[in-house]
Image (spheres, rainbow, N blue to C red):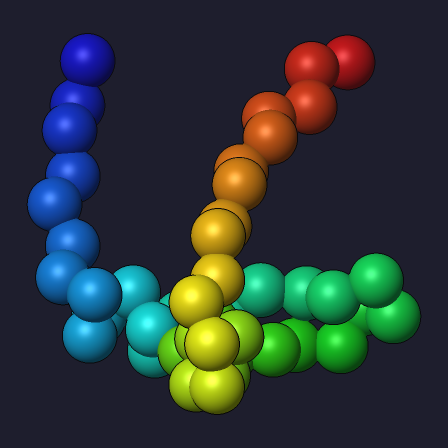
Length: 44
């Protein structure tokens, strides 16, 4: 198993897609308050 380490600063520069398929920079999610990110892997 490969393990990756990434800092919060590097993680914040990544983007994800919202429910409208628009790219959102992750750091914008926790600018005003605490955010919890959950990643769910879809099989099938």
